[in-house]
Image 1 (cartoon, rainbow, N blue to C red):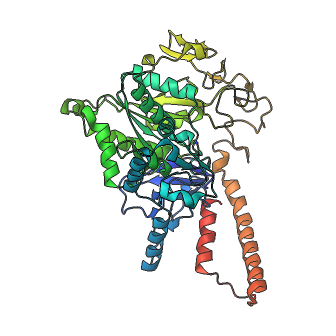
Image 2: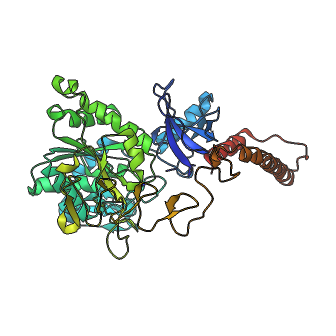
Image 3: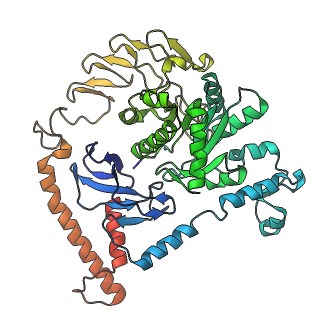
Length: 516
């Protein structure tokens, strides 16, 4: 709910943020792109760069913003690569083939026809994940079809649709009813009248259902989601097909205007953005997207509000707690709540015997923590010193002057480390830090783990860099010999024939840079 692309690391914002990490593939977010990024089926691609020993390699490349596995989207292009007209035309044709079979307008027309049908004629094909009109029944005779689709079912499409659970692409984990009910009640109690749901279909459904049933003060909701299947259940003012990793509206300016109008309604008052990105998603492209929403929201405010630069668009960013430092790096005003968010279809992130005792998913927000009341019946208490609600076992530390636990357990203060640590950790005199008792003790923290010298870390060890070069060269030479043997065996070519077809060479380079 990131990495090649299992090793995708930090994002680099040129001119502002230094490259982090020692080796891997990182995202470059130019402050002013020289040219528009090329398009893949998921919209504008992102610019990546390979970093070795903290240094950026000269050649950068574009890859898909939404998919971390090349099996899901194999787009690859060097930043300085010039494509022929034929290749550009082929790419455009491929992008068109990968789009949903029906346009947004066609989906709305089908939906309006479907809801006019009597209950006995409302059918849904589970095999195709599609609402069926009467003249389409024959095409789906051999499929798994369910009938008598009620209005209640139409209002909760996430219960009809199979969730997408590809962790590297669009991991679609859906809120448990407990967490969803809590969020709706909280948003209502805080006085929000409009909720922009970015990747939170269950929350969108419950808000609309609550408004119809008048269980809560009336709230409106707009869902932005990459799952185009929701297009067949909502009108244009309720859903936009959207990619949060590159801020791309698939239906163009019309959908963008729907979102802009929603944010700027009532001069931007009473609106909040709630987002639940895939846990494997890179933090920095998401942060860049949310800042674009903030800019969009500010343009609709009154002049007095514009002059007040301290005013922010309220945001609930739902993400695992171990991303706290990364999120706060981009949004310093954010704090992490202790509330543990649960999911229906996640093996671990839920209550009960089959899940963890504590879910690691939290709410990061710029709404003041002292305004947010967490349910006492679910194991939360108010800390008068911190002036916020915390987990019952999250005890206030007199040394840190804070309730320091991140995972719901009682943490212990280490006087040597001068901070609170997990209860299962102990202080290691060799590493000079707290760690698990069975950790691999590699030596003093202030020295290099490889050569033992003080003044640099393992990631920047000059001896390691020198040692790796011969091994890398030997591996390349061995690979070249192996390729020659394969070519000779399969095509009968002589041993001195070393040329490789351009397409294969590009594929090998792409895999090398993406680490796949």
